Length: 612
Image (cartoon, rainbow, N blue to C red; front, side, top):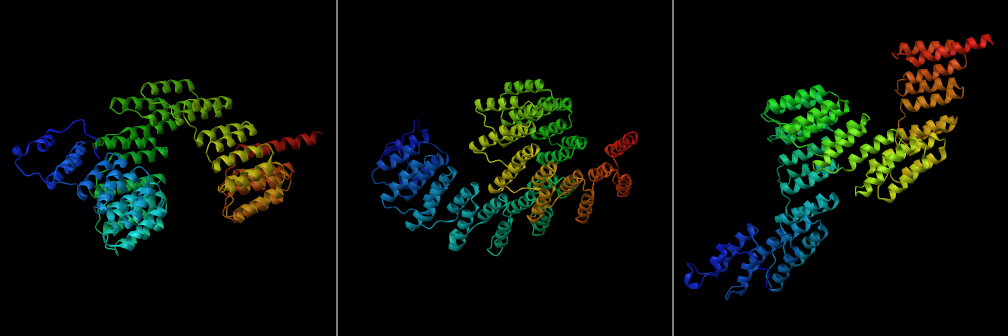
């Protein structure tokens, strides 16, 4: 069989292969041809096929297992697995032994094409049947394939198979790191730390990659304290943290809003000789912006510049986002121009952030102008862009315009996401158009999107506001059936709906149900029920419920007191109302405008009754 001939043939190969025997300074041998073939494979030079055809046509020389190994490697690295399998078939047909090195490029190629099932079949079945003992390398490629798909279950099975076989299959630090990292990404920290604890007994020393994966896993779960403890442990064991280690911890602390502690980590890394990078500063700047501390964020930007770290597109986009959230659009636009003047091209995130900020202020036309500018710079509007405008129309109660915009985006090949449906369903519910909201939710499901708890809560709220409590309860049942756990907001919505319909007994039953299912009522829950009792004139039961909430560690707020005060005033029990106001003040709860208005209205009613 002849293989594809290259359109060009490097001079060095043509010169060495096609000279006459009299001109050659050496005796041509398979060993020498292998050296040439390996050089071509290393450089991904298509002349490999010319040389292979030459080997097959030269008298006294035949391809051996190494020849085929090189050809299979080349075919795999140019993504021609069909040719790789062809060479493998020829190798086996000619009776050559298929060593592990033969299969490794094929397994790697299959995994890179997401064909992990086929790769597993070769490693676990074909290689075994051919009495080929795999080494750690093909196992690692297959592990990487399963880990990239998030299939930790099979990855662990494969890992423990390697441990069982031992020898050349013994997991290396790379093997451990791959599986540990994926377990951390999927939140399976107990399993990740289980493998980590096995490393030393197995003679495998954890490295910086191991620790970074574990610290990242802890930080993602909000367990920063344990992440800090692991940092000290790695230092104690002689491993020097790098910028990734510190950035991970800083990011974890910023996500929890603990900016001061994040700054302490920054100071610690500098004191230990580790230079922060643009990611370090951008993470801290993002944390400060999220806390609304924009001035401090700008100070930190000036500090990073003074220390030789130039802000990048992420840094600028973060600062622009912070300004937009504060409503300072002009300053955000100034920062955009500064960013461009410094040679940083805004990306889709930057534009979408500004468009959102502008539209939030109601300046839709200016938002549209920026969309046109964004398009002129080569960025197409995406689902985030459309969601921004859909949200603006929805909040303006122009839900039909929002729905039309949703149809426009679909017609342009942009698929709505969960947020698109959330915005529109919320808009219809707020307008009381529940049937349209339900229809849109069914459309969402038919398009392969699963409504989340927030969408179910919105629909329940809309139904409750229309007094359709039975149907709202059916939505709750459907939500649970679909595997979504209700939360305190879910129960509060239903309790409020029942209280509005004067069905306080059913509301109390729902309170007991939520407690029995492990959901703790909050101040809103109790305030709603107290309102329900007061509405029915059962002020005593409302007051009892206030004492009950205090016994559960919840402090009544101004709403709690105002509800009860209004209840007493309606029953003309002014002394009890005044006594309750003095009690609220003694507890550090300040009366508000509504408190005084309740007393003023009660006084007017009393005067009217006297006159009549």
